Amino acid sequence: MSSSAPALDAKAFFYMTLLALQFGVQPILTRTFTSNQVIRTTVVLAQEAVKLVMAFGMLNATGQIKKALQNWTLSSSVTVALVPATLYAIQNMCSLMAYQNLDALTYNVLNQTKTLSAALCCYLVMGRKQSNVQIVALFLLIAAALIVEKIISIDTFSTGGEASSRRDLQESQLHEHDSFSLNSKHWTHGVIPILAASFISGMTGAMTQRSLQSANGGRNPYLFSMELCVGGLVVLFINLLLSGDGADIINKGFFHGWQLSTLVPVLTNAAGGIIVGLVTKYAGSVRKGFALIFGLLFSGVYQAVSSSEGISNEHVVGGLLAALSLYLHAAFPPTRSATQGMSKAKTE
Figure 1: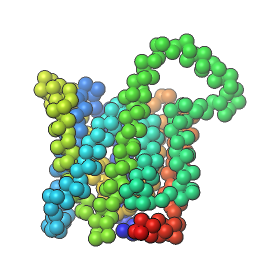
Figure 2: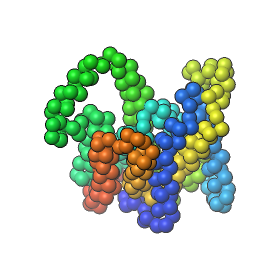
Figure 3: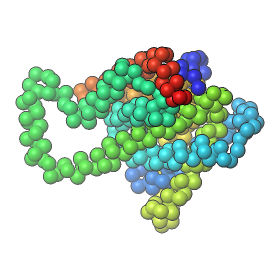
Figure 4: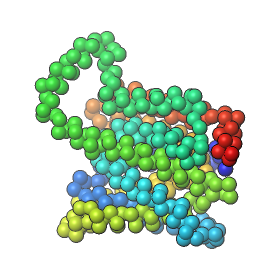
């Protein structure tokens, strides 16, 4: 497996652009068109089914189906796709819960913690070491997450910040009882699920990159998407038997809470899942970070022009720090000598 990223040709740039648009618009579409009354498992099931159909259609339309299936075996498919499929199914459910309880920019900034898990998981799965600059970038990303969640307040760095902080503390003490339930739900149904989804994303991303960029040319990205979908559907059906969602579907119906417009985020999220595989295949996981930066900025611009409140100082600073950390992480990988040393150590 090559230690360098693939060349950024026209195909790679095209897929990165599509990913940036999908990444930026997905939280907005899901919050707009997905009712809180929807049974979350039904949405994830629909996304996986639609993705399966899309991937098969693309595999057939591009004329790659014969070549992709030439050396395919059931055992290899289970080995390559079963664990990532299980993790993807859990990740999708966590992401959907977070979509419905966080604003688009907060969701996207917190979602950047996937870089932390990706760095760890790429090291564990592929032996990829982080450079000193990349380590700094990871700490910048943590700071961005703390700022956007207002754990670190921007007011404390401005004139009168100390007085403002005292007023905020007094107000929070007065309204602590009234706001506790809302704040708890914000964390349990928003922040924690997206952090869990980000970690799972790092692990599945490392596994996916290893499969798609192996020395023999790697697995076909459309076939790989189909394998993940089948595995994900199996996992979700098992989950229905063990969770309350199965009983809810029987009692309320599969499409309880659905509207025709609910198909919009289902279709875009399904397409996004395929695009992620294509970006990983042709651009590499490092350059995928650039696409996510543009998606993050797209969400911020949209929120600024569509909301009367506009973007807070915490969102601006947190978004800029997240963008800077992703840039540093993508632009300053380990030196060739360090990478070769790591590869040599693993072979020994």
